[in-house]
Image (cartoon, rainbow, N blue to C red; front, side, top):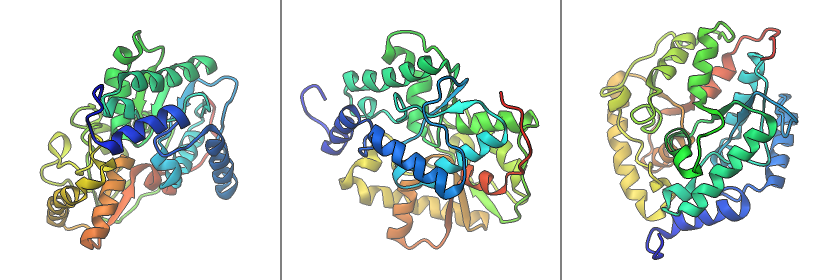
Length: 299
């Protein structure tokens, strides 16, 4: 990257993140507009820039621009459990294309924004959304990139929600649709949060079927490591998804759930290219659609 040699798509995404706040150009103003729209449209409280909060929620520009219901779903679930949380315009983008493109200066800028935002509101926990690489970079490389210990605990949204379920703070209506689960590499195999999705699926799904291989050995979506952002790699991504299609077919289900917007975008594009008739669904959206609401005590 220092020599200017590398995928132009990744370099541009990194520069966008540095200059505009996110790789897809989600500026602070765009963030505020999207939050206001989503909050009004779905009658859901989505706090932005609270003075203090014990939990800072991050988002990805993929979610904000392509899968906005995922943002609404996270808000509904956190609100239902009474979590004291906020988004911050000081540090909202969870992805780190500085890291993916080999530009350490941009990687540090992105990490610094998150750390500054968390410290400003006093958050001791930073919740990473449905984004595998965002989780991997922040959880396992964040302190090294920042140059000091992280002043907060990093948790993936599935880990956090699983803890709420196990603590009795979230419950769901049962769903009888047969489904399987795609394990994002950076969340399960590298991230160590393999079991969290199973806790959540057990809480909502009556007919959950594991793929083979599954868990830490699950087949990649084909778009990891920044490959999703590279237009020239589309054919490779589609060929990878052919294998996933066969694995899903062996389970006998038509619905595949996952917890990574990058995986979802990659597989959505391949689904269209290959005319796969199955359904791809976000885990947090599935949970939010079926959450049982009660009057929570905020913590």
